[in-house]
Image 1 (cartoon, rainbow, N blue to C red):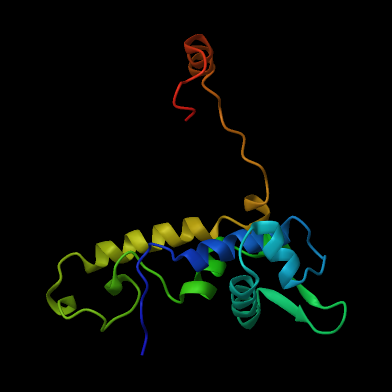
Image 2 (cartoon, rainbow, N blue to C red):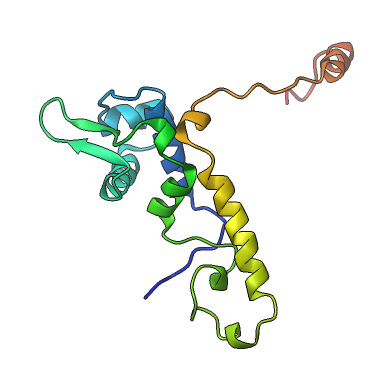
Amino acid sequence: MLVATMLRLSKLTDYGTVIMTHLARNPGRICSAAEVAAAIGVAVPTTSKILKRLARHHLLQSLRGANGGYLLARAPEQISIAQVIDAMEGPAGMTECSVAAGLCAQERLCAIRANWQSINGVVFRALDGVTLADMAQPVLRQVDIGALHDRRAQGPRADNS
């Protein structure tokens, strides 16, 4: 039975993207579960569970032995965020009916199913266009200098927040 996941991503999927991005910053390097867990601030059992799932979906390679661990199965440019989401969540969609037929009782009479399927396609093509190499790059944000000046002019805040 196919179970569709709505677009809201689980905490494990979020961690999965963080793990994969961490590994993308060091492609070709073998990292233990404990090392990855420490680097991203997630408990080792949770990290291990995610690493195993990603390896089962052939996004990671698992190496056994004293110097074993995990590394990306392909170059960061060849792994998309859509692939990571699919490995962690299974088929995902904006609505149940945008993933597969037969998941919604209203499907036969629904006048907007095709529209949701189109929207679903656009969203996942966008996610498929973002690679781990993209995610591994720092993103510079503009700083509102005026807000910084205003904050300095107000002086220290009494509530320390």
